[in-house]
Length: 472
Image (cartoon, rainbow, N blue to C red; front, side):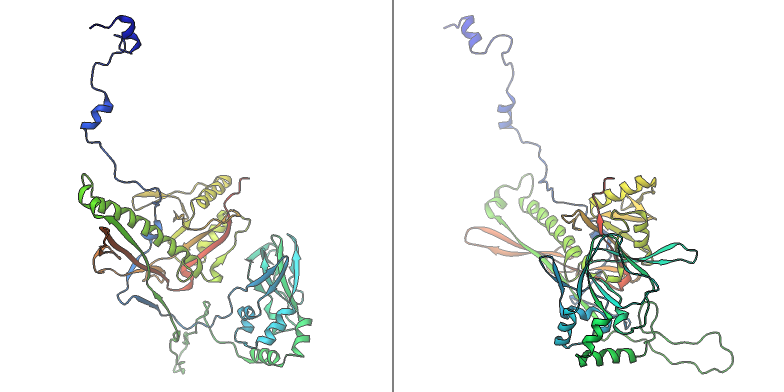
């Protein structure tokens, strides 16, 4: 039976569009596709894990022994905010050096109640150089810069204090002291102030506080070096048989110990998948590979943000600085790397690195990049600036830049791990078979053990509150 031309055209089999070969959709039924391994968007460069030198910790705990230091009371003060009213927590006054060992909570509460809240606009002067220093200031919010006049009449910036910092504590001990610098608000600032007059009224009532401050005044200054460590006495440049001083190197009585932290997960694979679907790729291996990638990402996050050993939480307060104008200016980077000898790396969020590049372009500066592990990375003064997306960026679009000196021999920052684990899959990471349950699901325990230690305080510094959204 034949089909006429009209019917042939209606069926789409005209000579012009008739198919003369096998369709690709049908052909795929007989073909094996070429496929990629499973991909994962969450994998980052993880420069921190590559940059830190890793130290073997066989006992699971690493003890950092240091020389005895007499630097006390350099912490930050914490406040309670109710609406627009701010109050200092009485026990937090112990962060002021003169009150560090004072334990009378009733007197501390009375002292906290005498702090008066003050608001300052940008440019307002809190203290004037040369005038009587009769006020203690606690900075609840904002930034205040310290200024002094140089030898040639120029204005020198001595530093910046911000949220939780304090200054003027000499008013607690000496009613005749003078301000050695001018303190001026950089931003809108909320501060709590205690006047010398209010303090003296309280001292007339609180005998324990009066006796404590009197005893502090009588304590002779402990001889220390410029880092606050107990000094080592010696003689030099003498002649003849001069009596030489005796000395010894004192150590901290309770050195800090870092225990290895752990990141773990349980990987589950159905036995049917493991048995039947392993060509051309091993399903268990691919599952394990992606699990380890996620675990390494978590490891780097903890090294940055963990409250016990994370770098952002372990930088000493005198190693934290504030930007001069908000964005990461070249001057800010200079001050950051100059705080320590041999700064080895700078770590910043990718947005922060972009902000650094904008400031370089605006200033007409084009630093030469450096090569690191086969990659070309930006650098400042020869110090590589490495990307780390684990450094937080706040809702206010501010972030931090971390500067580190690395190495155990260099008294720097080191990573801690333990290799040679049972069922070790990678250094410091093991995969342990946990069995098969009654649903035929195979379970593997994937664990990695790690931590980080700062051997001396100036090995780690942070440039805080960097504005990463400045588009002038």
